[in-house]
Length: 164
Image (cartoon, rainbow, N blue to C red; front, side, top):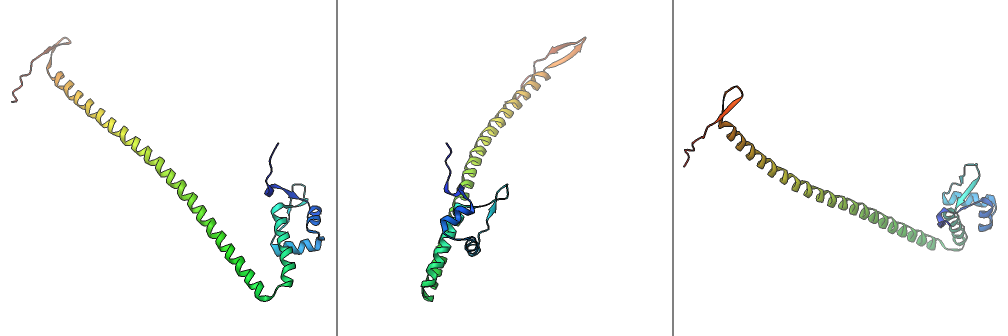
């Protein structure tokens, strides 16, 4: 069982005519006013989305109400529409910026954790290098105590330490 959202629903021209109670010429006129371009499916048949039909209904209702309102009321409605659009645009921009900023902050936190891990590992490796260097110096000092006497034999001499 698949759930389909309203925006995924498609309607045929005959269904749109029935919903809007309009003929093809009126639908074409409404499409022009609403800046809707009917889409075509793979077989070349015209279809409308649920959102398109909803906008067409709004345009049709606005056309019917605009005939009965005064010019001042029309200006007021236009101003209200612009205010609403401005609010929606501002909200969308803020929401998108907030999402992007939170994603970037999350990435920075992950990178910071990774840097701390790498710094810790780096310190451990530095300590290991110092330890191996000390061991290498001790081995060289021990090696200097031996002198080759021939035929693959070596003799160990005790080095006297004159340091205080």
